[in-house]
Image (cartoon, rainbow, N blue to C red; front, side):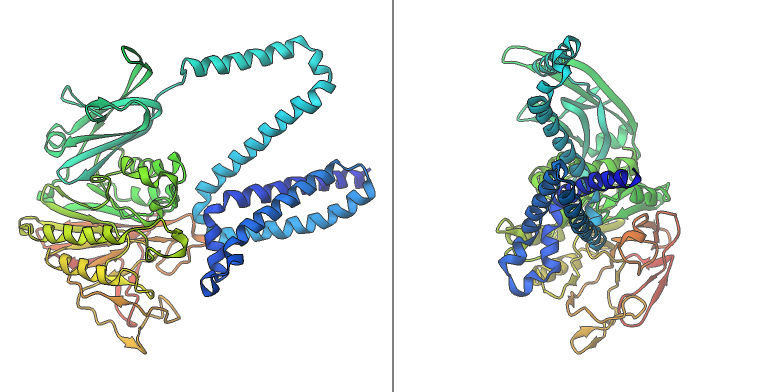
Length: 570
């Protein structure tokens, strides 16, 4: 009896595991190119390695289907024999899935799990359809009138709700106030498609296009002149569903609103701001890290806040995190990361965050703070195989050089502080020498602008590039600090810069922690306090536990900056 129960459990577990592997691997498709890359596709450009993830997925499908057929077989002898074989195969693939997650797919789990459960839901729906077509007619249920009438009622209710556009609306993501040039772009979202506006001192500012309210969107961006909100110091966001928008009339739902207070940046008594990058959907850890700087006046998000833009929810995660960190009470500056270029919603992402004319480079001013945001785009050249002929960033980067040339002509000496933000560090040219010429030109223009601080990410490290630092070479390679890296991997180039460029893109608890599973609970952020009276700024990296992080220079066996890092202003 016990043996039969164990065999039955084994058969069911085998079936579940087979379909789990199939759907989980399919949900992991953003990582498929990474699998090919890990298997050294770039060494041979073998079509087999490129298509291997698809082949594996097809194989997993065949295994899952055969497991299902086996489960339905009545020949117990064959069923038990093949069950043992499939059990071993399924466990091997499960281990492979776990290894892939540990090697890097962990960054995508906030994307992978929702899609996995979506596919499981689709499978359940398919099973229900199969049940009603093949099994239901053979059961006694088809004779039960109450069951039939209940089904009919559910169908009519769903059809009726769809016909009258019936939904429950509310504000699903609270306000985020992005600073772009001399305006604030207030972004928030509604549960269903709706029109939206922001009210300040009884004046309404709508989310419009060409003079008309946008009403078929869940994401709302309302532009407000900075001086108006700075003076009012409070605002109210509104969403209102338009149930029917016809040619000669319409029907409105209720007006739903939320009030916010707002604290504009005031540099008269200093400046406190906080920065994060490369969160990659680890929102809880990042939000917790940012919470330890309670008096921050500005939030700087330096890119790769999410891992890809495949769905509306992915794109809106940036706002969810930013709102939790600021509660809509202080300005946010956003720089796009290379991962926020990937996926279906990448081309609509300018509607979700601060942007200028659908681009992600711009300047901004907040009191006596001047800032400039740059966007390198992808981290490889446009012809890189992972972009499959969809990347054309050369002209985009060249336009930013022209943009910076114009910015450099401005009188920036009148500002107390000059901040630059770019996800991919401009001063750090990698082994592949990607964008070398353009990075050098961008650095040259930034050198003319007396930049006090540049914030970057991308490298998944905590580096400080200090002007005038002696970067020693051995055999054409930069010498690494052995406390940071035991190898000597870097044969790139550091541009001639006269400004400090810091990187804040690390998970873990120390500067040298790996980004694997054991360190996923902590995101390291950077708080900067600017003291204009003493002409200095103090940098403190902290973990999600609020602990300070000791920082050393990555190069030259040298310079321990400590935990409270002080630099003079220009």
